[in-house]
Length: 190
Image (cartoon, rainbow, N blue to C red):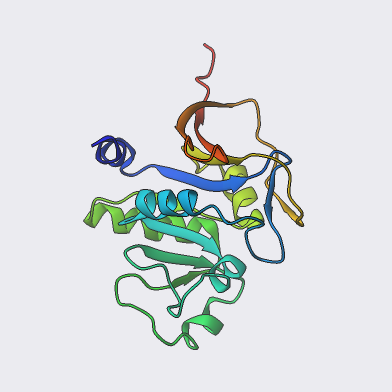
């Protein structure tokens, strides 16, 4: 029931979703530096039925035989959308992937899509896309999985500014390997 309430609250919002370790590491060689099945299940549950915005490298690193994450509309940002639109086999009429040359174009498409359906928009990486989204001010909230410890890798999440405040959303009580914080913008002082 809690999950359904969150979807209702978040309709039309743009949520940045990411997992990072204590050193803000998010990737290693275009893959996750860890495998947390509980967090991957949560990611699938939270994003199901939503719109996913990702960079080309993140899209190319998706697991499985399909060029998209099923049950969600997949928007890919690339410098050359035409190159990928013409060469993608196995596209799905609803899921995509759909290709754009900017975060603004992907967000505009996503907002138009959610007007027709009740969906939430998620920005799911990689680092360049996260940085662009934060700099453009389109992000309404962030769901950040904080993975315990530090890991080896080469891709880090941008610094989180003072304008964000987080509260505990979920804690992995089974193994204690991660917790999820829900960040929203701090209200501006009058």
